[in-house]
Image 1 (cartoon, helix red, strand yellow):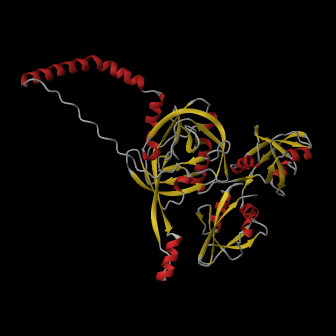
Image 2: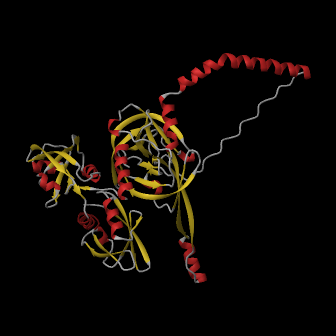
Image 3: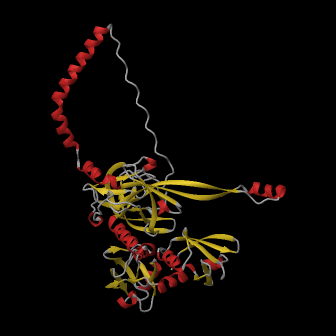
Length: 481
């Protein structure tokens, strides 16, 4: 998730804290009276006053309760049960200190010691279907070997991952059940700046906490960990570690966002994935197990003042088309190398990272209306995305990662070709090495490799795990198309 400027980065939330136990109330002070009769009389008077109070205040209290049931209260009563707690466990191996490694080798002729530790993290989720489908953030369940979902009524379920989309930071879980409380998706396209929103989640393990605020801004772009996230909803409703994956509701109780990130350098600056995007990802993950991607068939670069002058463009910001796939959507739409793209669907384009982030959200048949300058003259071009096929995925892996792979006998993938001059080539990767993982996902088949590459976006830092013989090596490779 990416934040304005370059001060503290937006922080995804995944705490490892247990729910605190509220303190016990202090005992009431006792009253001392002179004698038994005095005590009886005292309590009799108190009882009489209490009866009078109940009789005179009962009707106003009921009316007051109805007035206090505001739209926020009604929205929480209606939707709150659909917000769940998501806890994960994963096992990590901790190696001993290098000094002691040497000590054991020198004196005991033994291998260095290591130990396995189970780490627990907590997050939030939202039940989106009564048959047990839960949406949460991908970073909440990343590397989780065991996932449990706890409902508001404290029922617990084991959950399995239906699918994840790391480029959108969304995941879908499934628990066994029927007739479960579920939330309705709202329309995030009509969210208004200044309207009241409600955040529900499990910050720091405080289950089903409710905060309110307003929509501070829409269309926010966040940059973090080498990746660009677009069109986030910004809110000042308090979002803390543990809220990740929780619900952002409007006052009608409809889901308008999935709480995802906070800005580490400020207070009450939170971000949510718009519900329209979340719904599309959720539908694809449930139906296909992966997200269908669209392909525009072009690569771009930032527009610099020097490029603008050379191309005769009057644009101060935008991107320049540097490569077009033969026969692809961009070529069919009439785009040329050297065209300056100023806006997409009426929204200005600031740089290549933002533009390619928008392309990453394309689905087949999506239509883009591009405002383009060619030789200084403006024109509009309409581009229709095509499905991202296996061939285009393999081409992306070759261009962006610099490798080609094939399935090995017995399982797993083998690197069969390394592009000269690529980052992996300069890092020492060579044909015959085994590809173990991409971006934290274990890779055992070509289908898993294609799915992992499909979810990667330009500029994203990709963690690549390579195995050569008995040893594994980790590399951080920027995904550069």
